[in-house]
Image 1 (cartoon, rainbow, N blue to C red):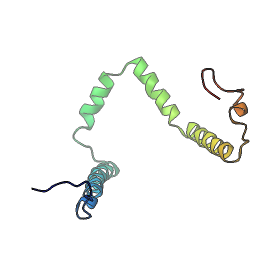
Image 2 (image 1 turned 90 degrees about the vertical axis):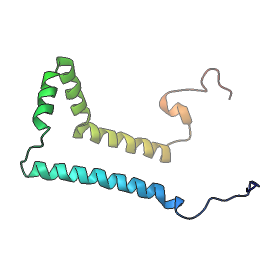
Image 3 (image 1 turned 135 degrees about the vertical axis):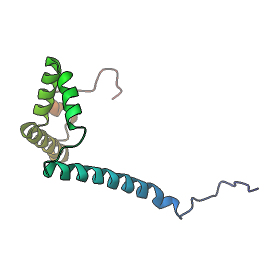
Length: 117
C-alpha cells in the first residue's frame, strides 16, 4: 500500500504520446477513407451507395430545404468568404492600431447601465 503525500508527479513515459498518437491514427484513417473516395470519383467509378443516397435526397426535397441549401451555398461562396476575410483583417488592424477611446470608437458613449466605472 502506498501513501499519497501530494508530491507525486506524472510519469514521463508512454502516457505523453498516447493521445497524440491516437489522434494522428484517427486522422490518418479518415484521410485514407477520403483518398479512397477521391480515387473512385476520379476514375469515374460509382460507389455502391451513390444511387440509393441520391434517390433518398431527391425524395426528401422540399422547397424550403432547397432554399436553405441555396442560402448555405451562397454563404460559403467566394464573395462572402472574401468579405469575411477583409472584415476580420480590418478588425485586427483596428484592435492593433486603433485609438484608445474604447467603445466611443463604435458610437457608444460611456459605460453600460448597471456597470461600475
